[in-house]
Image (tube, helix red, strand yellow):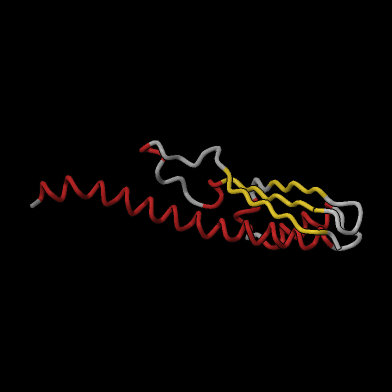
Length: 120
């Protein structure tokens, strides 16, 4: 019985750590998507600036996801133009890097969401 436990416990531990990390990343992905949507809505308003869009994105994201935040914005010049807001955060700010010992680390990887809307 103890031999079976010794053989299966590390596998169970890796599966549980992977599940925990995936859950945190999935939740953070939803927050990044919502931030890009909010930024795009701000960008569609007349007179919106890049600073306004970045402030809106930062306001929507929780503090832990603001570390390493990158916002790419392409504002249209006229009504009917397409605006683009891309939000990117490091995965390491979204979840602890629990699986690096088995080669599935999060270092250098980013969560990204891009939203396009028509300018008003």
